[in-house]
Image (cartoon, rainbow, N blue to C red; front, top):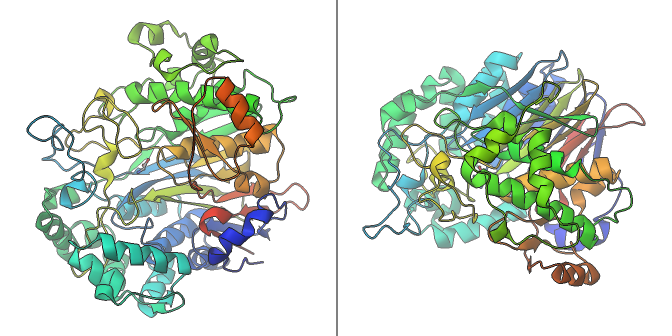
Length: 568
Ligand code: GLY
């Protein structure tokens, strides 16, 4: 069963936001991702006998072709895996700072953070991790050859695909913004002769690059012609990455974050993502309250979530960074004791101003005792297979189209992930997130992320595969989908479509998407001391849930940003 393309209809779909009808249902496998072609690439691999990891690698490479805003080989991401045999893993293929980077590299002579250098041009790019990450996933958990799983992506790049409306529109905006990046305008904007919706979009340079990777694996990307091209293109735009940086890049297998919420196990991404720790800590705080008599999106509901969000994000600003460089107190932050301690100053009637919420200090953290019984423009896609293996992947170039640097002659964009570091303690990055020592720039370090690919299970069986793009809002988006499904018993499609809001401690404001808060709720929240700010729709959740009725899987793409699902 397949969903047809719905991208341009989004504004007309508002009346269906709460539709309970699942978009796709399948008993043998489901893929939910930004593009239909990418979903089909995954289903093709599943039908050919591949497992969910094989399919996830195929989807990831396909998105690098069909979704250049965020799908990538020039960026990085995280993959959380739960195999039906009980194995659990987190693959970290986050970008790394080049060896010659240094903590003050984005400060000008007077110590101010440069407004653009961490975002556009060669200095903005971290060393890409996606190719190494896909290889790691295949080596550790896949069952098919790289040759097979890369075939659909190469076909899409070579033969082309129909330009979706939303991509055509994004490329028209890129054309205006990327004036200083001629290769980007040549490859993606035909030097100003812009692609129109439904035109066939072919990418011969990218097809050549993908074939090199298909043939040689990591060697086809991190050394040889592609690596030379990356270094030269970065240098031409003022960057400092070297061939050694590329050769030395490694994807890492990490212990996932494991928490539990009302009897469900939560499996999510550890550092260098803040996502898993912040998500589990917020769920632990929410578990201290019952939602039985709390109306969905009433002021009381919003207040509870906003208060736990403020507390988790304040600790994120100090305690979270790349755990290879900084000792992250992960077990403490995901403990139930931490949640109880953090919520001691919670006022059920009034907002706590963010200025009165401090990140925990060393001695407060030390006072939290762990007990043995306590377990511990991005894009997201989810995959399940017929054996019950599940894969949750979030991958990104950071901003839409990353640094705007396209590798000369090789047809792919590089990330602008260096902006996810804290360029200066206390100065917000482009998502308004504040960081400190833990996330300061250091050579070879991975920048802190908010990406939160997550798998929720019960009694060892996968129930929900979920994640989202959206920078700082990723973690609270995933939190709300879990809150909606577990506490409010929404169907998956309802939970995904439901309007959302976000608080990240600083700035002290609740931002909310279209139709998220009724006028009555807004008024009540203001009385409680909140500042509210409306924003555009955000967070393209692409989720899968076990179907209780028929035993298969329901795939729920997010209507906000024209996602798709495919199943069989
Ligand atoms: N680049 C967004 C994130 O990783 O959180």
